[in-house]
Image 1 (tube, rainbow, N blue to C red):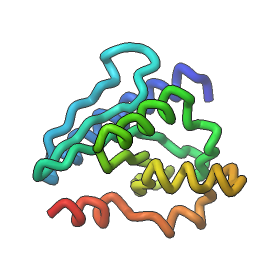
Image 2: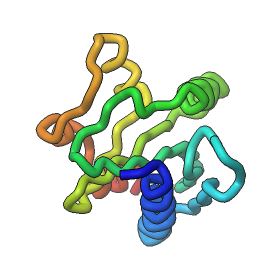
Image 3: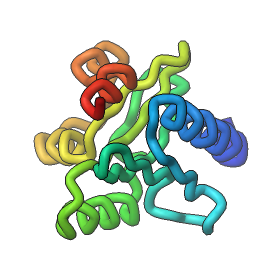
Image 4: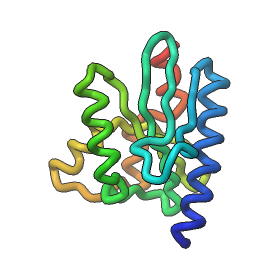
Length: 136
């Protein structure tokens, strides 16, 4: 799949994800149109808790950690250093399931030399529904 198609699909998922968040009582802003190379896709807030989120479509039901860009890592690290606790990657699999994987968990995987989240490994992370319930 070309980079252009990945970007188009990703933009669609970002819009869909913001709508999903709104349906669950979040204020959500899609930053995709702000500029090329923004460090995250969505800022969402519920009950006074801000969350920085990057949306990733996993068309092969795998997520290579190499897809985390340097500007994303820098921005999410700074987000946490400035007192914000929640940074997540929303990962959508081929069948439409969405898993919420925290930035910290991804950094730990990198630290331990793991290069990819496989389809089987996604089940150890929270589904979108489980994640949303934490904000109720």
